[in-house]
Image (cartoon, rainbow, N blue to C red; front, side, top):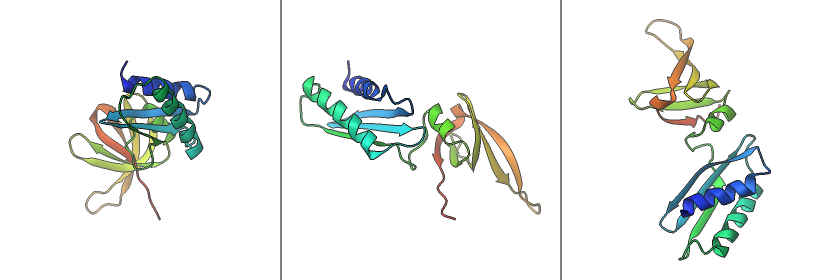
Length: 153
């Protein structure tokens, strides 16, 4: 079993009694292990610390890392790209900036999401006409990245 698989397994073990929390990603690069978590209603530092202690303890006990390593457990954060269906569901009603694989961008309110596509409500302005709000369906396979747009208006 790889270190990445074991870290995921240990984190899932710790989160099994918390259905509102989930793993976004596990990356192992060189001597650094990064575990990103999220929650349907957000995630706290305490949640991250509990998972970190559990994973760290077992990595040491099982001697999975033969050299010194760095374990980072944190929130995916608002600036991180959305990658899981559950993250899209959590962010319905928020503004997203979607970059498509063809290079085009759409920014608007996420009004729907399912395993294959997103529905974004956004404004389109044609020359000489008033801007109109339209709904655009974007297939997930055509999305290069999607991030929550943060507005300070």
